[in-house]
Length: 487
Image (cartoon, rainbow, N blue to C red):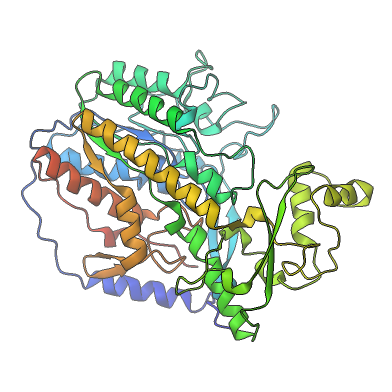
């Protein structure tokens, strides 16, 4: 079993630095704004806009958000100040995040450690007594809110205790029930933006996918709701005549969260001479106590391998459990019980919980027997992938039509991320891929970009801005931004 160790990783990182340092200078055009006016720029969106990375929002990620990088390039052609709700230096670790300690390729298991020092608030704001993040109430240009869905923009109190802790952080105490759309409208009225980027919609399908299509509260947003709310937010942004960019949403099945574990699992089984005909039994549908779920009996060959063979995707959250395949283990179900109830998994209550979800014998091989199946929360099967792709295409058609109607530029992030997944992405002579840990572009959560990934996105956005508005914005050297930070 090949294993990255703390002693070998710095050498890889050093190699990356050497390669980056040998690149030729970029041939940059003379910067100009074209027909666009970048003097007052605002960014609207979710975690990608906020600079979320490594499963957290923290100061370094915020400073390397794509809107921040864009604003720096806009400043060369008349762009004005761009204020983000940065965590302070004293609270620079923000919500907390994870750092890499090592990696086991056979199981795609990242040995990570949560960063909790100098964290603002509790990182969750889950109860009435838990501390909120320290508020940032100065006027801001970056309205990115991690976790927000297009379907959330009309929700009163979304920035309250019952809502989103990141929106709570930037919601004035005097208007605790302000909706996200109202915040956008108020910012437009105050700043009078001349240019904007809008990238909402990812979470309207991402939550369904990362939950394996198995959590009732993480359903895909209805198409009608998505279309109506898209019009609301774009009408608000263009009310004063601002120009801008609308980003489509990527098909999330291309990202490491869904592509890292299955191939590693298959490779490890091959290494241990486990035949591809060995049974693989999983549940499908919503997984909850009292909720009927269906068993699917298939074989290991159904799990997608590195060659793309197989129709089952395993989520990154499956990585702690794939090594238990075939063993008489109830670890997943004990963890699931703790998560669902907050109680220790012992006694009649736990037994009843297992019975209610149809797990009747954890002495059977995990993932090999109907009595002890692999859970649907960790599997995105073919039907669920079709649901994801259909919704993504539907939402992107809505976003594209809305942008075209308003004569806005379009950043087709779906095409961009598909291209990265299929062929990588070269930045000034250095190849980057969608590989987990080693690909440079995706952070440790397997979903959000690294600083280099955000720099690449900013460059791609500048390409469509230049094409639409006749500007000549200068690209940044993405190699000067880091990928995954090795120990």
